[in-house]
Amino acid sequence: TTLTLNVLDDLILEPNETVTITLDSIISGDAEIKVGTPSGKMLTFEASADTYLDSTNGSSVFGAAGNVQVGQVTSPTDERHALLQFTNFIGNLANQIPANTKLSSAFLRLTTPGSLTGSFRLHEMVAGWTEALTWDSALLNTNASQGLQADGFEAETLYIPLAALIGSTSDTNVTTTVQDWISGIDTTNVGWALWPSGASAFTFFSRENGVA
Image (tube, rainbow, N blue to C red; front, side, top):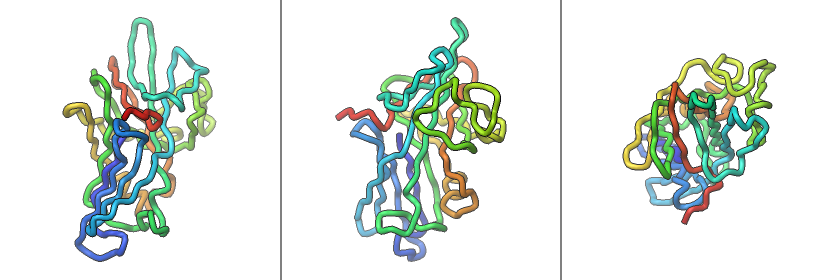
């Protein structure tokens, strides 16, 4: 999983410079955020959490799985929702990005060992969660329905369409969401949920996948 941020101001806060923050592809190891500065220095952060929920395995925990799965089939009926979270990259420590840094762009990269079938929706999460969450226990913010709900209580109703694959990667523009986190407009960074839109199937590498 990869999150790429192009920044107008670097860590020294000098105007009109560009910094790129990349949560690197699992294919070279665990998920990371890499920060390249104009001087060539690279800072690295590991991703914080990812998992998926499976309606036919409602009590199963997938937080340590090597892949994250999302999709929907109708015979037999099965639906899978994915969760992604990236934290600890905003702050005033030496290896963090200062609050209020201006971004020119931010992209979420998902890398798959296979293919993408159908379409998917990326919703910003509202409720907090952990990798121990299951389909059955996903009753967040007193929601009475199992699985994730885009109802404004568990996840936002608005969504971003997941970008199509180019090769083995999907790069989705998430600039508005990430800029809101960095600017403090949105103080609740609990990541994103990925939903299937009808019949679909998509598997991507998790942060635990240590493929060399």
